[in-house]
Length: 332
Image (cartoon, rainbow, N blue to C red; front, top):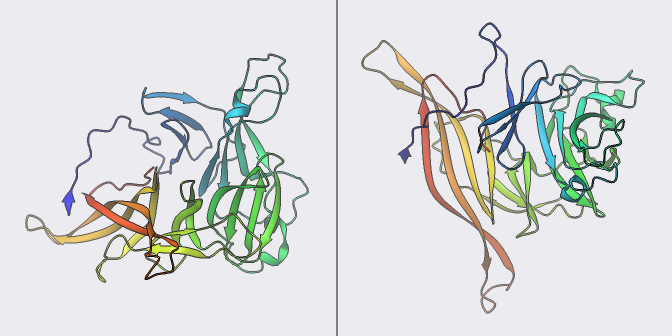
């Protein structure tokens, strides 16, 4: 396997030296990245122009957030109405209980919406604005908060239900909910969870959703049809792209980048310990392995097989990056 070395960064961004705090980074749109610090202060960075803009602050900082971007180009270009356009939904992965809350909204769930300001009458004026969302109902139901542990959102994706865009989340031990991104209303679709772990991506070429399987680690690339949610979706394929020796264990969850047309980059993260002859003791290193894969339809021989179309995963090149002092946190 070939080793790669990262070039000089195009941007260095970190908290103040006296603040050992995390900065979260999310993919946005059109080669843009969305950054937010521990105080809820967001920044928008455009990779092509290398420009950074400050944005309105979140209503409340998030501790372990995830994001889902829902595009709406038609509404973005409609300046005559107040209908919301594209939105970036930012949610707590492990929300706190709100059993005694008396308000409709929750500061643990927010949407960054491209829309007209309600106080302006200018037709050609739209900006990005934060809006609080109602929480999924389980956050305020006492029966889910009877122990010390808090239910975790284990998988999430976007999909269309009856022509309306929705965000779908699964919570371990609770079930699966869908949020209508236009009306901001939640519905529970089942006590089951999606057969995935982490972010799930829709691939229109196959009309399937791809992500990592919910099996015990290691999680492998898998696919399922989430078009019908009247029962628990089942996997239609699961593929192992990289052989992992038994003594090599992943140190955190893998990450998936959708490159389009059934092509993906899978990144896995490991800790490696090697002996350094020039120093005392062993040296710990962070290792990231990048593997390009391609999913293609496989047409079975109608004479000898069932004649139906199945999917096959073709692994391509794998590259690894190793570092003593830094670790790759996000790939997109």
